[in-house]
Image (cartoon, rainbow, N blue to C red; front, side, top):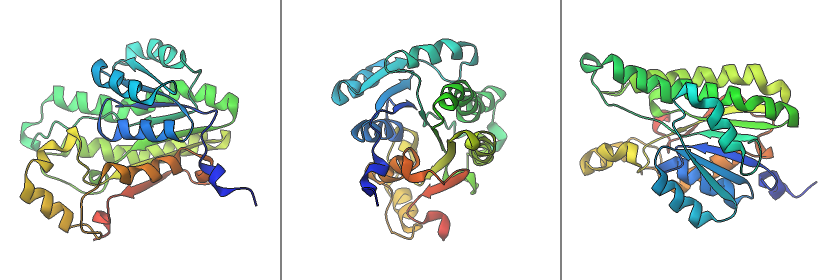
Length: 253
């Protein structure tokens, strides 16, 4: 038997992580770099991207851009492929939650949510798949949510996109797994990020959420490390079209 630790070795791989300026996206980018990959972080804010790349060092590069801007996608793909070559791993962590009640949802908020949370993962993946096909190896990791299967107040637009991510993940798997490109999704529970400031800013609400998990606590950033590395490495070669909930058992109760 070969050393099983090599299953998680990403040496020689190139990863693109969207939403790498903060939260789970930045954590994913750090984990992949630590596992040996060259990582390009993509986000709209340059300062936190530059700070992240400075900490990681030569294994990191960044591109300032909006993955929801479809017209700019060809240029963005060329830019993110320039530092290390075409990515064979893409992690779609960029996302937005307008937290609008159903009666208050605006067309602008709805369209912006779908563009970033659902359309961008597909069209960016579609643009990167040809290079993955040439290598015969690729990993696509989408970000699902508790709202992939649960309805939360003020989450109708966000929940619609995250429900869509589950089916998008399966459809991507059906389309591209035969070329050695797996497609899976991670469904985080409650983690302390910019997107969940409203949750963690309310101590009573955060405590209620923790009590709803099987483990009895909310997520910590390091809880995402293993799942990300698993789904981006050879360790998950026969896993595709799946949504892995990383939620402490929230959806199990």
